[in-house]
Amino acid sequence: MNETPTRTVAEQVTEILAQAGIRRCYTVPGESFLGLLDALERHPAMTLVSTRHESGAAIMADAEAKLTGVPAVAAASRGPGAANLAVGVHTARQDSTPMVVFLGQVSTDRLGREAFQEVDLTAFYAPITKWATTVHRADRLAEVTAQAIRVATTGRPGPVAIAVPGDLFTAPAPEPSAPPMAAAPPRPALADEERDRLAAWLAMAERPVIIAGGGAYRARAELIAVAERFQVGVYTSWRRQDVFPNNHPLYLGHLGLGCPKTVLAALEAADAVLVVGSRLSEITTQTYRLPESTHPARPCSVAQIDIDPGQVGAVTRVWLGAVADAASALSSLNAAEVSVGERDWSAAHRAWVETTTPPPGVQRPEAALHPWSVVTAMRRVLPQDTVLTNDAGNFAGFLHRGWWYRYPRTQLAPTSGAMGYAVPAAVAAKLTEPHRTVVAVAGDGGALMTGQELETAARLGLAVTVVVFQNGVYGTIAMHQAAELGRTAATDISGPLDLAGYARGLGACGATVHTPAEMEGALAEALRSEAPTLIDARTDPEAISTEATMSQLLRGGSN
Image (cartoon, rainbow, N blue to C red; front, side, top):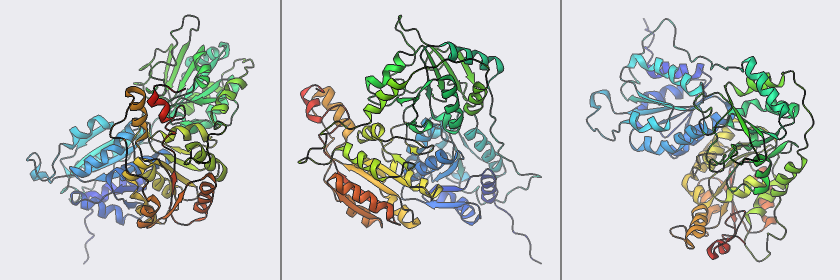
């Protein structure tokens, strides 16, 4: 008589992940979690994605969760694998992205003996996750997995890490009467009193504005409705430009690096600022200067709505702080019975629009491609609902200025400023939503940190486009050095490199472009291709930022 095979702990864990709606695990396979790899590979609802580097795996998990709101899994082995994974996990923490991380550990009988590649993974991951733990008993792993999913998705979302000795995954699973489940996260609403006070405050203000962050990602319709109902101008926080349609007449701009003074003017003049789903980072607040006004002639009151009580009032004084889900709170606020007068934001909106247009004559015929020309070509050729994944680097300043985010879930960008984000994020975005156009935008520095994930894209048949601004320099650091020291150090990198040939070596298509016309042609060809494509845009290193050239900074000014 055939006996029913005993289910392993890894199989039980995989089933809990699937029941929670998790669909993918991104990993570089390791010997300390063989049982988990096997269970994921065999589960019909799960997909196991093998990447070329653990940092790429974690970034892919982050990007998928940003698009779907459902955690993805990143898995790595002990020691080096866990260290490589950390960049993407830290990104998820800074970006409030739900993620479940499994870290294979040395076997139980070798723990604490500095065994091969052993690291205290709980201590390592505690500062960059919402919760980190090590499981020591096989019969507790299912319970801990369900708890990890709850922690990752409730309150301010974020990554959780579970370190598991390798021998536990293949242990026989206990059979509880019912498997532990990951409960749906609660969505607290505004209290009636909070709603009425906020509504009256917005209605009576002369110059009210909203700062909307990632916590408003899934409250887009409600945010638009409140902005229109109360005639409030809307700013988006650092690298969260797609939370509000940029072509809306109430859109006032992006609170990013190097934000133009003309864009900041409406915020600096505001007498009421409602912060929705933003942790008010250093960059969003322009080095913690805004939105709180210290000018006696321009008193400003600030209110904040956030799902995480730890964020309310953490950076600036608030007269009212509400712990609530953004969509629920905004929907309630929109229903408040209050009369609101007309406000004219056309001048402030126009001030932002003017910053999105390249200065006349910026592309000199004899010079290499100007970054503005690359972004202009993208605007002409790419669909408006393209998902853009952008890396860290000064090239991104031109993208942040020049691209209009009209549609939701079209920007995947790390607020942590992690280099190497764009290419892996594009792979995950195309896997998650294969019907959408996905374009990664990177500098040559970031592209060569994780560009090997083009092989992952080619292997999986994912037609992503990678636009590389190749100027042969670590631009952000060169800019800071030139501005502060009048000279540079360690920022020149070899170039121009044959990045198109590099892409072809990884199984993708490649094109090298030197002119705006070539750029447009390469983009059009990439959109027609059924394979991943890298476009090597040879850009001018003189165009170091949107505000100044490299020569100007070295001479000691931007004029």
